[in-house]
Image 1: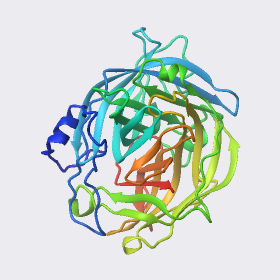
Image 2: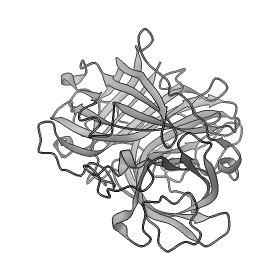
Image 3: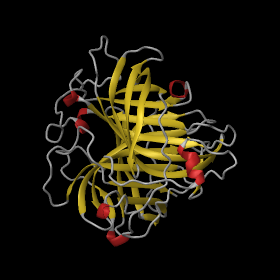
Length: 419
């Protein structure tokens, strides 16, 4: 969703960032101007308007139960990046065969919602990261023969009604001290889950039996060959944040549209939160079920809680995290980092508004011991969970019947990093 408000960058350093460039001599941390108090007025975020590269190498991963996934080398072409104000942008993305083939495999409009920024220090030096939560409906523009494994079985070529909903995260990273970059490093992960989560008859816009034990992921890195050579599929258990080490947690929840403002920013530090593992299993990749909740002591009792409501008629038992794999190029951002795709059903109490029922999507990344580590705004953090809503309804109804299947409007971002 592109939000209606507009903003203007005026600081000289921000003007430099707008061109995707930062001096290696800078301190490499620039707040996004989204700190705020409870029910605060409009915020004017200072988030650089980066442009996506015209082309980026990528790797497709095709999961089947818990078997080692098939992989398929692809690349992604991006169209012009359109910023709609505040925090969001869209861009046409086309997934093409291999490194040079003109064959288009998947096409759709990527939607990106800004989540947060931080600086890290690791083997490659100090670096500043801006994270977005991304969603896209990908279709097949033409019949393919043969059809590569990365093309979901639920898509009918040329029919927009059968596009496949992918979600994940996108990072822009700049300011490597050791190797100054004129353009940001871009890291992308997108995921399309099994039938149970995306094609369930009672809640999906595209119900059916297409890939009951199969799921699909695309990872991309703007540095050549990193995605193909330095991403390894792995069955990792997602990090926990439970007693006695669950407090404090660095985190936030923000409302996009409170009183028609860009944000109602609410930075919560520390935040008592739970990221508690319930169980693990395999279906279209290795999955962890985990409770993800706050303690209702935030601004005006603002909070979120993962739910088991309606299970198994609804597919989520708290939050479902699918292990995608691990980045392994230690000297290039993101270094040694584990990656999961997250989704779940939540209650969401706005800090200044209503209680809502939401389906949220996003990702978790965890920097390993030999990887990068956050320096600012909080030192020593290694795990990052970021979610945005893709379905919102009043807590007491009415409930629009289609909960999943395509990109919908978004209203809230939440994120945490266990200390």
